[in-house]
Image 1 (cartoon, one colour):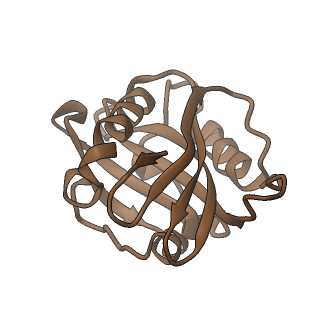
Image 2 (tube, helix red, strand yellow; image 1 turned 180 degrees about the vertical axis):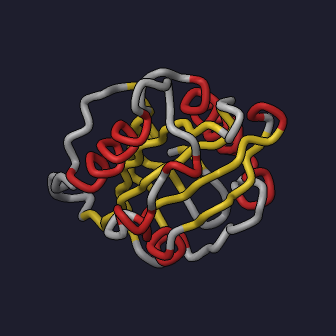
Image 3 (cartoon, helix red, strand yellow; image 1 turned 90 degrees about the vertical axis):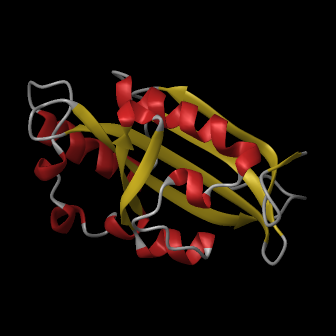
Length: 172
C-alpha cells in the first residue's frame, strides 16, 4: 500500500495511460467537447471551452494553469463535486501547496504528460479515505492553449465512487 498523506492511502494505482479509448459517458462528453473546440489545432484554447454547454460535467472539472512550463500547476477552476469528494477547495492554490508531498512528483509527471501530449491522459485507481473507506476514481486530462496558442493549461474531469473492497468494483 502506498501512502499519499495522512488522509489518503492508495491501494490500487494510480494508473495512467494515454488513450483515445474513453468510454465512460461523462468523461466522453468532455472529450467530445474538447475535440469539437479543438478543430484543426492540436488543442483548443481555454477561452474556447464552454462550461455552460457541458454544465453536467462542470462540477467534476478542474482547470489548472501550468507554472513555468509545468514545474507546478495553479488551480484556476475547481468543480463543486471535486470539493465534495476530496473535502478540499484548492481554487487559486498551487498543486505543491495542497497535494501530499509523497505523491506529488507522480501527479506532476502526469500533468506534464497531459500538457505536452497529443493523446488524452486517463488516470484511475482506488484509494482509502479513513472516514469513507474505498474510493475509486477515473480521470481524463487534456491540454489547453493560451490565447497565443501555446500550451499553458490542463482540463481534467474526475468521477468518484465508493466501492466495496470485497466485491468486484462496478464500472463508472
